[in-house]
Length: 200
Image (tube, rainbow, N blue to C red):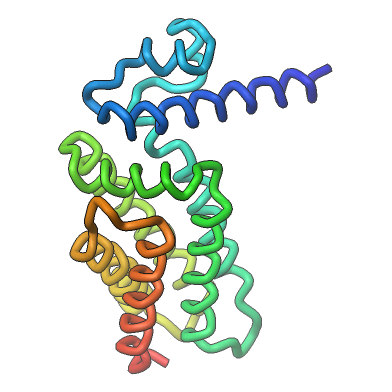
């Protein structure tokens, strides 16, 4: 019975996420209300708050899951495995996570644009980005204990993620598909990793 309840909760949560991104794409973030999202998902506004505290939470609904995927890619490091291989695996895992996410590609592109253009989402996105980078840097440092200092691990993660994020922003246009955004991210990651070879 508990498993059934959990699956029902997961379906409702997914319905809210899908409804939100459909409406965000059609109407815009500010123009979409919590009541609109709840109605689209066929639940009450009161029930909405059992799943999310705000519209912002819907945008970042899978942050922890994606961080866990990235962290697993780093901690899988085998003895003697070089830094460049670990960074490549981190990029591959992050891209794969983006492709396998609960959002469709169209909705994922909407999310990227919203985070980069809505002031409230920009602020939260920057906070989460800093927190994510710091946690990944600590994980990388731990995986290369005695080989990378904390400064070097932080520089590697900061350079990699910073390159990807800025390249995506610089190349962002309304007609960009999710696949094109991912291509930009991959290219930026390759450039960053090439520049980090001095740490190897």
